[in-house]
Length: 446
Image (cartoon, rainbow, N blue to C red; front, side):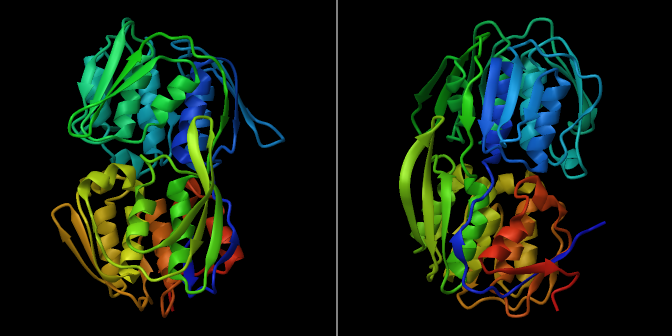
């Protein structure tokens, strides 16, 4: 059954808000722990539905994965190309990252692995992963259009390749590199625009040899030496900057707010939203910068203030692709027009996020336009009327973005189903309510 939520005008948001662990790093820590020899300990793992689906998948591959009473997860790996053939279908739920990375894992050895997911994931394109993996000798049987459910059939001998990404996608890059672990020789991925580099960082952390070369025009050439022996390692998962974006923008918009978000990952290939918000005039301070398990982190101190509309260039999209829904909310409250360029990837996320944000903002009375792959939001600087219910189409980030907008609405704002929020940010409503928000069960914003 759907679980609608109603978000009303908030009091000033205050306090220290601990957001969940980074989803991208959580997926990868479980996967690399399973591909390593020995024990991997993971502190701060995101215990959302997406990541728990990946934990179950690694168990299906024969790895021991368990959560200790201390909250630390422990993975006893099987080594590269040492996994079992799963006895049943692997259900990735809503996790596009989990599905695409696990397809790379399944490609490493001559086994057959069946994948499926929820209604949203079964609509998402897997052909972008299937194309390079097919060049390595992997076979696929899927629904029309390369969509799940489907089977990944690993070859007897995996062929290393050099592959140029046709789009900026860390998921595709990671799938190829994960498959390349099982190939003799070097596997290379050339990306025209840099994407999040958590896979490269974690490969090195577990003992693989990875070379990264900067290319003319801003791209990168990433080369992995195949068939390494990965060794179990401790991993500390930073707070997810994509999740931190929601309380951060809420604090910027709700007058009188000041919140601290501790231990947030500040990897520059993931931090584009906060760079953009600062260009809009946001009061955001990075305190206590440090490095944990190879990843930069800091405590974010966010204070409310006025925002100005700006133009966000297309080349920034890879560093903030998951944050455009909440940026669009910030833009609706800014003074002047914000233009977000080059958002074609938003059309193939958990939902068509470009269309969903444009329709939802328009329903709230915001002037918004979609021009090709650009989103143009005309901010009024004075809040929105609200009084509507937004369909979120199983998309956690659309759901949270409109709950934040509800905090500065005149009449309250509802979402039709909050269930998907648990995929990345379990406890979101409770955390925000503890800081001063007013989110409660409710079928309509009236």
